[in-house]
Length: 250
Ligand code: NAD
Image (tube, rainbow, N blue to C red; front, side, top):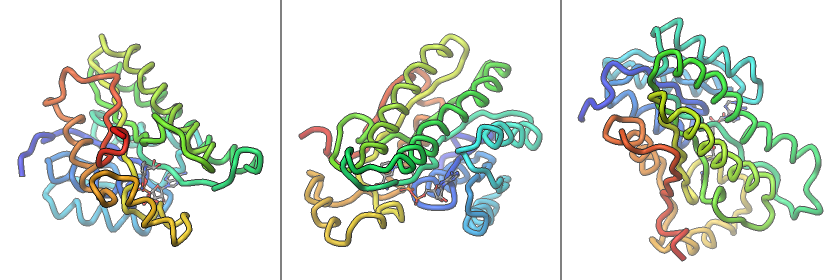
């Protein structure tokens, strides 16, 4: 395994499961010290132990990204433990309510916007302040194909992910000349626990929507995130990268 991130400090939110877990593990494999954050301490600690076996440092931080103070504390933890924050992957997210717009509850709307969109603003706000002080840093935001196109029955999720893409472009423009790169990744449907909110008969239908003929794997998203986080992507900022089995090509 190439150690393209040796000596770097990487923070991943929502790192106890699915895509975030795969990203945290791959950061460790590439030589980064990893701050594993989630609201699930038990599963998060399992990820930390796996990363520690890779001869790098790893720590778990319990933090709800829907709370700005906790997003600030996450950055402080990185700085206190490792002296800097080189890489942040703002990945934590939920699937949210499944209903047509007229039937979507006000509470469901507030929840998904808070966890999937406000959280990315909160994280960016404190991460960029720290990275600007350092004069260097990389952020990868977890968007979705649903940050580019709509789908019925998920107005909150679609609006939040479109917002994540907009925040990504704005932050990239603001900090491009300050040594900080900000990009977004847009997975199609990836086989993780997040998809468990969907009705059982929806799986085959989802597969048929991907020209490649299957759902994606968390590792396939993680590979793209690691590349964007490394110096190999040194001229890449403000971009949205699909990892979608051809979904958006149709
Ligand atoms: P997952 O459910 O497997 O993992 C999400 C993790 O986020 C969990 O460990 C959960 O505990 C954590 N989390 C939830 N709310 C949190 C909060 N308030 N604060 C901190 N952590 C919180 O889901 P996943 O499929 O790995 O999704 C990860 C990201 O990828 C999400 O942003 C999701 O929208 C995005 N995404 C997923 C898919 C897919 O098909 N699975 C497709 C496109 C984008």
